[in-house]
Length: 299
Image: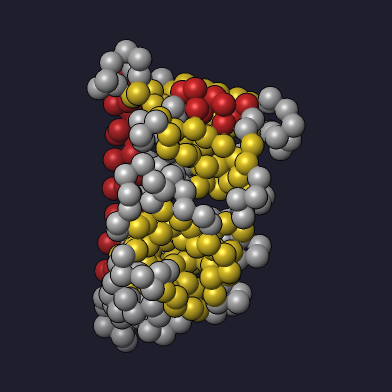
């Protein structure tokens, strides 16, 4: 069970509006949120228990819709079906781009392809396509140049971060009933397989594109597949690989125990975790909603 206790917490902020949601960021003791004015805010946890909330850029992004980040990057972004609003929380540089200018296309999600160069892959889906034909592509956005610098060919499956300049590609084959996993470079010039992709193909493993179940820094992923015991059961796997994964078969695979007691414990742990997060958000919102002349927990 996860328990969070709050005591003698002071909130120092120039904002007077509540916040909703949090996302991680590559900055110690900090995360990013958004207030009800649709402005990105940095929340910093101090050594003495104080919580500091500061608006990062006034009026930005100013749009509704979900927002995302990556723990290995300083970029945070908000998106809808067409427009993406990117912000570097360290430099406070902000850009808005159209992920697509075609009314027959829509933006699905984005992920940071290269944290150092600040390159972002944006998945674009075609509204109309022929059966058994590719129906998506990725646009590579360069945050520093504020422009899309490359578009992949039309492909049949999503990409996932894997290693530096390498990505996992889950290509749908056999009329979308099977997936073949491969490794590709950023510009789709070379594709290859290794022990990891061969095992993922054998298991017909699935991962979740818009979540962080693949971690390139820790060289691990979480996935699931249909259990041979029955169609209504799923098997969960954890996989880890070595730095020289392309040249060796060094692979660690763990099938996660799904006994009833284990799953029940996991469920309650997850439920208490999110309850604790909600408690944190309610606490922050309560303090931020106070009159302006009361900026902290003391009079």
